[in-house]
Length: 611
Image 1 (cartoon, rainbow, N blue to C red):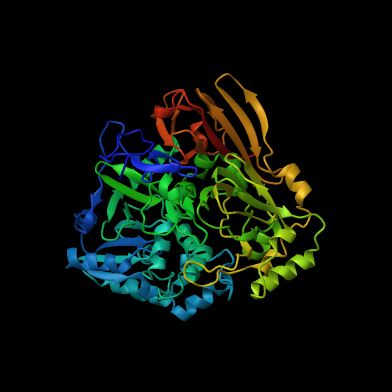
Image 2: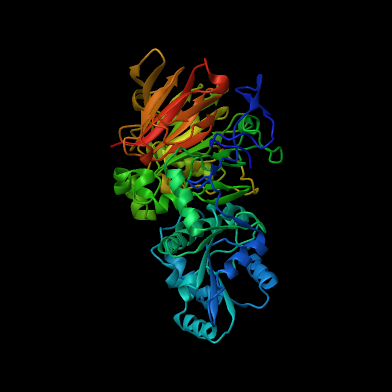
């Protein structure tokens, strides 16, 4: 792992080439793809981390020493953890132990499918309904009692592993094996894992994802939270056959450190049918994929957060911090409004050298609540990190169009009869670097080719109703799902050219100016709950969380440093295009140019939940 905003030196890697804009000016890449937080006790001691299956299992089983009679080591697993790898490790390193598998006490797969069906959306390829199931719902009570009786009859060491294992027997020692959702998705794509309680690993990965999003992850998160304070150890299973284990106490101390300072989650990059080339150069990405369309560099629900324990890097789901410390991370008012959910999302969308995004609309609040069980919707905006000459954004509808005519044209395009006539129905706006386009729910929109978008939105990112995908295929060679049926129920037909020009395009208001900085309000729209502020600065700028979480991106300048005016945290260096989070508990902080940017003008874009 390389160095991060922890302000430590790099791990021997030199700078790498990147390019800005049209790649005319070559620079060295300083985008940090592997941020981490160092964990050190107050006395300067580095806490223990056990790595490799031999070290992990020796420590966990060794904790049973001194107990008499039957000794139970329980390893509770988040869905997606490779339980077969874990079982093989137990057999290889604890050969005298008796192994039990929680999967043996689940309902039959047919029963599980029936249980999940109300939340799985039927034949809908994308959408379901948020579950109200718990892990207990999956277990057969008769099988559970039979396994408990079998465990009681065994002498020596018993190892019980799997999802729901802690509900069968919490064990004398309890280990929680965790996994970030992004890594789970990678395993779905490789057909390596199945959904909770099934053997459906050959199912199309997008359908596995849908089921995990609406059901499995919610079920496992609920149980995970019940086990806080009851586990002895936490196990990082992100990398196959490279387990890392820390004590539950040290996990809690790691989260405590994160709450007191700025931090970054680990970004991940993904190709897309419309993807471009800007991120590949700017972020120094591998040349394997033809393009990169997405960068999720601020989605705690799916990203991970890495902590450094001496020479070991422990990767845990960043959603854990949201679930365990929502009031201190989000702030009391944000938590009261959204619960233990991180309501703001930053991601990057690259169409420079690529194609248009899908033409789409996001659901209205009542619709997303009634149809999918979500409490708020995906309002968003496009901030232009960069743009080719001639780049455009599709936003809003032309004046005086007939809704039935546009819907008929979309449906004809979907049937393959003709391309959608976007020029007749949709407004296009020229886009240049640092423009900001506001996209409240119900507004038809998409980014055109030639744009590098910092997308700032509310978190329900899966709820995009595609209306037209420009007649292209997905990366799997198949058409991507089009959602005209949902979309037409959510289009606000009064979001037309005059309104868009007046309220949604570069609605910038200067708020304050000093010789060293100026602050601007850039949105979002009055109907949206996220506020965004841009600061241009050549010197230090004072910020304050005011009791609510802040999410920022360095949108101009090579690098800046975030500091505490009271010395509450170590200086935290951020680089161009990196997203970082300031927990509500931090309070005051200062941002100023750093390194190569000293003497140059920098800019940050900050998002927070309006009071």
